[in-house]
Length: 301
Length: 325
Image (spheres, rainbow over the protein chains, first blue to last red):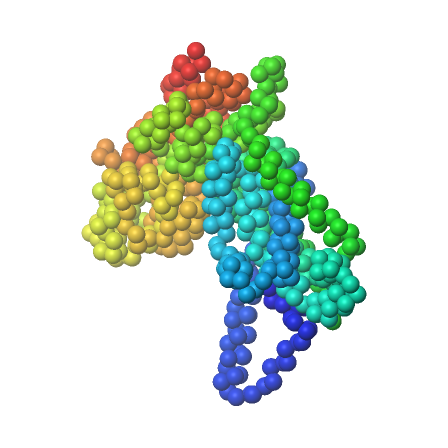
């Protein structure tokens, strides 16, 4: 994921020079191995996607979007899961993007890197990006318990867990985007009498919006596919109403898929595959959007 | 476009903080808007159920059918596991706790400490089956001792061939598939067969998803595994259920033998635990639980479990009547 961002935002925009071939036998063997690895993993991905489509195609109908979970696979649909995913991801975006961007601006433009505590924070942000998702679920569970929230499976609770999960990713990608704005822009702004804050707000941030948008969309698409942190919060596997607020109970698509795959009836397996197709489609769209924004709006300095 | 996006960033972050604060301050009661004044048949409010993932399809099925009767009542079902469900239940967070085993001493103590009184209701019967590959023509009936010999903790690494289980069995390696430690199926199977919950050899392929066990057993001629009876009924071509001899002759797992109690020791009851205060004070909980018990046969059939006998239904209704009075 970061590689997509990296390519656009390498400092000074240098593309790395192409493999300037020493065509020694060892290099060739290594090259073949790398391609074999790629082909191998791609083959599995392809098999997975194809079987999912074969299993789920028949059930990928309107009723998947309009029906509630039911005891019989014939009548069941993923409507609350789809709406729940929208609520949770929307809330996650509202919670984390402003906070993540603000944190990145602070770390990149204002924090004094000679101070030890700023370096500790930087190091921790990097490390947090690698923490397994379920840990964030446990953290959110602990926080909600501490606050005395009784029913923890609520939209705001899920958004909190997913927000913690993607915050480091948003901070890191935003910092990359800010860093790619050349120093000359800042110096020019300052030379014209703008204050530090005016420079950041009017020059640096607008110039890095494409990078921030790309990073945020990719982070949100990760949150969209996540089930583990929500399961820890006591995710619902059955509900017969549409999630309709921050304190409403909810389920999401990955949880619904998880529940359906563990049922004995073959019909539920098909439904799970159909929901997977929907989820896959959404992820492809989000990633496509991120790539589009990067290519369309990225300024090359 | 870029400018406007940024202009909104400031207010948006304020909004985010405000949202966080309301989330902390707000008291999300599970029974928010409980319809005390609602007319009969037009009730509202919510019923919160959590607990065993084995029982969840059952309570979900009940909630699904219940929607046709009382569309205004929101029943939610979560799957924290039997133990996790009791934890939330005894903290007063849920109205109903789904359980694939009876409540344990320490859990009762926790409920008492928090002043949560409850009623245990049997809602369905469940059977575990020992299954083998359809090509397996030797193991059609196994005694509990033989099953224990296959699965016991002492057999780890040593019992690996069918002819070790019974000398008359062919020389065929055993492939082992079963439920993983987090499932009620695992707890129940180990307690019933090996005499102690959790006691089992560790060199088998565990899965929290019983469908993986189905696939494993169906693809390996020497395989055996254990899973819920419903999985056998749903996969008649890929699995063969073994008759179990619990001391009184070979008994095949079926609805009838589970119901009449002859399929021992692998037949069991599934429970819901209802908080007495919820049942007495929240009309929507009472309506739902009453409906659940009254229609337990349809519910069990829909969720592929074994229905209660008439006697069991009467017992459940009497227990509920005692709470209501």
